[in-house]
Image (cartoon, rainbow, N blue to C red; front, side):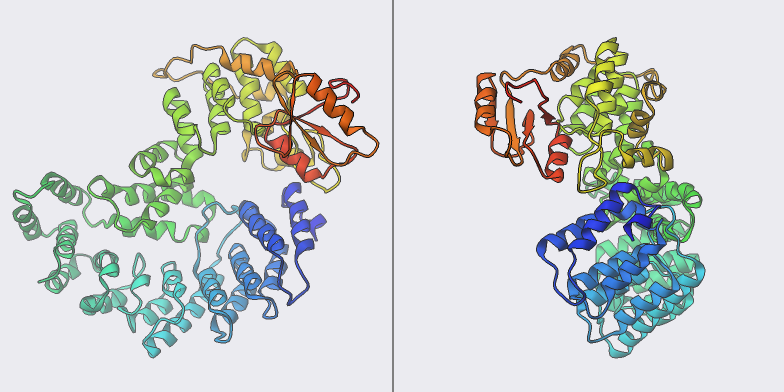
Length: 588
């Protein structure tokens, strides 16, 4: 199958074939290596899977009842990328099967409900008829639990957070307090009223979401009953009820809030939140934001970008006054920002909740580079993934010395770090170094077979530049050549910080290009049958280098024997280790 998967980049086709090769026969338990490879492949391939519907068959194969539970769970997860009537039927059958392991059934119901695109391929789309079929299955399971008076599958109420259909609302309304986890952003009037009637029975951990959902659904008509239900409630619940009442025009609630806040610590923050609700009448921001983020996969990407921007603003609105009590709201906020593709919104999130910054890191780094915040970007990139992207953006936005300095702190040879060095050298007046980089120090190509590591650009890089040029602009520019890379250069922002007054970056590039063994480390890799390994070791030592006994990240060079495993060579190349060439060591 791998050869026909033309919508996947070549490297992923190769990895898929390798992953399938390692999996056992139907019904047998996979080795730890096979399971690890499968998990890594799913994580790395997620942005592409939905583009290749032929892969549905593999997910159904993993989900087969004869498979061991770990593989069945992965099969249910895999099928989140392929919402069709066929996959919904298969997942629903597993969810209903009381004899199936709980972990498998939980993943099946989660996959039935999950309608978020996040970083999945733009081809991922839940069509209305598929949504209706999945909702019918969820409603059936919810109704059975309501009748039994207990939640059988813990993921079922969480999956129901994504459903906005009458059939699910009717099932939830049978026991709203039982399904507290489901009460978040979608409800109709009947469900909201049933939830209000049982509010006293709702667990405290679900009450804030429930209050907001009731108010957002019933509006001003439901405020008197909501206030009545909160008489004698805990202070936090009463305060939330008052804020919601203000949002729907209750002047008495404003007066009560002012009395409660009189002389209280941080009173200004509370009163500022009240003013926010006055200015945004009829809006419950977390509910409105979640109504977008929960169902991004129900619309094409183009239709969700603007909505995600508004959702990001909504999910961040109340954090001006207090932290979100549930951490997952920050994650949802981050994915809303990611969906909006707005660097300015990424800046707001990164400042407010640094723990969520990795989800929007490229947008955040782009924002800092565009505005010329050199020191802040360098500090943010140190020790974090994405330092190569940060260096590349500094080079693009007119800060070449800072770009080269940052690129010098990473030994990973990615297209972004190489592009940063090339563009940085050109813009720093060292075209000679840039030309040498383009000739002698390009990044390694991705593997597309188990035989050899192709030279850059290999089949994978050429495919990416042709079919997905915007996914990695640095890679695309390197494939197309010098002029394409230079065309990316932009001037610095008016308020940009000065470039770094140092030549360390260019000197580091020069040291890397003008190769020499004194003071370096060398790893001997592979089998040495016709080559005299002992003589080569002596020559390396004589030249002033030191042998290391593993492919460690800081190794300078590797010396390959008659044969070496291609994945080891690829690992060495990606971490910046360079191959010793013929003539650089006596006897080689």
